[in-house]
Image (cartoon, rainbow, N blue to C red; front, side, top):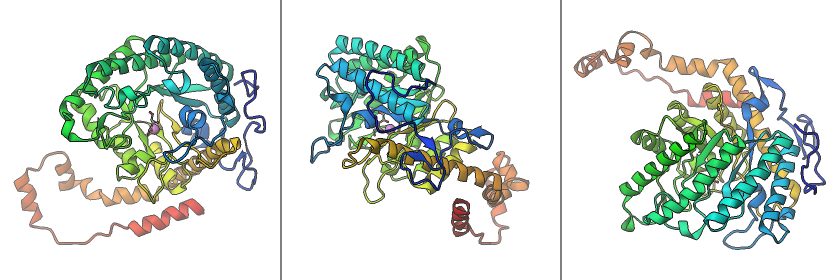
Length: 444
Ligand code: XUL
Ligand code: CO
């Protein structure tokens, strides 16, 4: 990695130096208290386990505007009048940020990084910006975790992209996905993401659900074929979300997406990118969707954030709850890591967090929360008590008749006959004991 922390001509974060690890007693807000990148945890460094990525859209594009008020956040990279010059400044600010923070990865939507325009001009902008990003990657060693196409913001996508009832709009979405796949290959991206922002409906009264979902599957299959043709070898990722912006999105939650992928023969090439706040929006917790995806062998990557437990919105806050990151890391460790995936901070600072340094502080706090989660999950794994409890809880299926049942050796009549011999014993689930144990693991 380069020793200079800014690669352009201007330093955008002059008051912030390279963020270092200072340990848990440090009061320096611009230092890690728990994330010590080269510290070995369970045979791998924290950096290798956690594979942190910064999201271009929240950190360099989100202005703090909401339906009730205009922009609040300072963007010194957004000052030039020429759109391409602004995009290059933004790339310089982004790579200065990644390098000072010490993350190895970033993620972006096409239109976060390249100016949007009519189809041919858009393609040229994408090629130009891809070249700029490639040079910055080379200069800093920062890599692309994934990119994606924003086929939900432009008004043309108001009725959907791949699920639009009008064919020409679906084809227009292909312009962006094709260019984004090409950018991915040029940048050595490790995954490619599809998030179906408008792939759903606002009312069923005007919607043929089956036809739209068949179109989505056809679009994804064709995009997959093109990606493979131009040399993309990594996993394609679908990011489930139940609603917002639509009333109902087809990629509602992990279980729904897995069913969809299997129904359309896409589960060999596609995995899931699970976002904490999307799972909670679906009425599940983060760990639930991670576990569902992992159990199917399809947990590819994670959008690390959190919602506010007092409302149902996609507030995209930085993750700070260590019990939650511990449970997430337990699932990730159990499956042997995220492979080519990572922990992408799909999270934004609050509208009134208006100091430039707040962007750093927010990421530091999220990285520390996951470092703590990793260490606690590893402590639980090596302690072994919880794994033993789970093993014991299901041990009646490990031998004898229970094992015969699992192997399909008992027919239903035999099963019912055995049911007559049962004494109605009550076996405690031990939830409170486990909850008390988790606190002990967290704080001892
Ligand atoms: C929206 C969301 C997206 C995806 C990429 O809720 O999470 O930013 O991660 O399109
Ligand atoms: Co996301």
